[in-house]
Image (cartoon, rainbow, N blue to C red):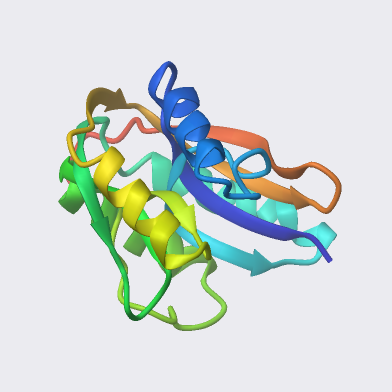
Length: 175
């Protein structure tokens, strides 16, 4: 049974830059997880459901417009979860609306934590390493346009693989 996820990819050169930082902190997931903002966390689907998943995501994309995203500084979910992330300074509400629409179509269970759009740069590492990640990227900034989101499928050998991209092409009337 495939595990899928839906996310906004952080474009280059920012995605690779943040992936390199994640790897430098010793995060073993740096190579297997593309740099992204999650819309739907890992969810099990049957192989024969993937066509329906893609159709539903096409509908969602058709109702949402492209938007600007700005990443700035770091934050953490500690002590609740051992995660350090780069924060969104712009694009938060658009991500929240998009994630709500995606989950409305595909969610199989309630979220474990409230949705908070972010870009993970260190996860499940020793406290001292999380502190280093937090401090070293505190001044990080990047801005870019978001014109799509993607469906990812987890491959146990290589990690998360982009399966299909969905262009945001709505007229904004859903907002």
